[in-house]
Image (cartoon, rainbow, N blue to C red):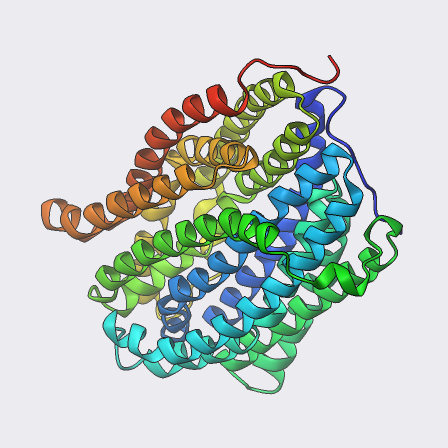
Length: 454
């Protein structure tokens, strides 16, 4: 099936954003199956201790992924802008430079991850009985950093051209492979947590190869050797877009690790319950991240085409769609949460009951705060699409401060369940900064001037 390139500089903004986000949502559903299936197989087949070990590695693993996604999404902002402006030669140069920078960063991050894994787990006071499993999982996942980077860059290239369907198809293929390999490696070969990690990386490799195959057929992106030459000004521009986004995700992840530090002191069953709900975090924000990806592409293309009025219209439309979606997702989680969480938790009746109470309470708190999270994704992505990644980085720092303060002090005030309010507090703090940032950036970047088109 051919790649579907789509210009978002003409047509109804609400329709464009929603239809572009739909395949991204479906793709994110398949991507979340990586995590969910790993958790289900590990939790049900290997028990609560293995589930806790998986959970103890979550934020460090997410930090690595967040840094990778930050850089590649930052690079995609410039790609979308050049595509929207019709500058295809410059687009090819941006893609080539992004590939070189991504390859260099992936090797650097792989080495840093291997060196930092054990010291960070010890710093987080990971319980001794789950430390080996957490460390093994991270070692394998960090070996696959180049694979993960390649997929994220290739998917970002496709999304910057308005194609959300090919990444969806890639995720569908990879998800099916991941499910089969999870069962084979963990339950068949008895490889334990290592099998879950290996299955995820192989599935990610398949998704990357799928995207590469389709990009290779695009005449628009026929790269030459010169396309891979770093140009000083362009490379600095790419780094200026990517680094703040990577740093923002890194800071957010550090806040998450502080939360994990507090959770690690509450016992294995509490960790297991927390992990079960935390694995649904990605499911809760599937639509939010999809709207975010859509906004980066929509705003970037329209900025390149100097369609400033359409950017404001698109932001308003996306906020309305996102808020409606968040209410629907929250209602579904509150109604079906216990049933879904039951897929992850096993053990004695007493263990299951205790872990379930922890998990459902946390899930309820996060669900209630979803409208705040959805506004965060849309607003942050709109600002980034306008080429300002510094102010969203500031919002990430505020998110870190709010999450850390809530994690450290709320449990002292209301008990260990106070930790569950750290996420909504972080989202609320970030939203306050982003609302002001959007007003500032939109007045500067979208100041009335000569527009092209209506």
